[in-house]
Amino acid sequence: MKILALIGGSGSGKSTILNGLREHFGERAAVLSLDNYYRPKSELPVDENGETNFDLPEVINDADLVRDIDHLRAGRPIALNTYTYNRDVMQSEK
Image (cartoon, rainbow, N blue to C red; front, side):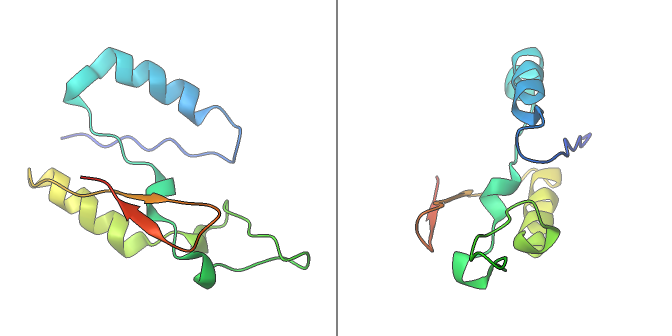
């Protein structure tokens, strides 16, 4: 298994590149988005205006990300969460 990480700030073109890779590799590729690994909003730091900067490394639950990568590498399934920006919850995807 090979792992490719696309890294960049908001609006930098990651999704555009990813869509091309998905088209090329199809079902042979598993895709994880860091959006699926945001910590609960109540745990995220805010700036002086009370806004959350989702581009900071500390907003990511890296332990869950590493766990899921390990599961995929071992051929085990994972259940992704979907972050809702307006609520402090993660919704599980099956």
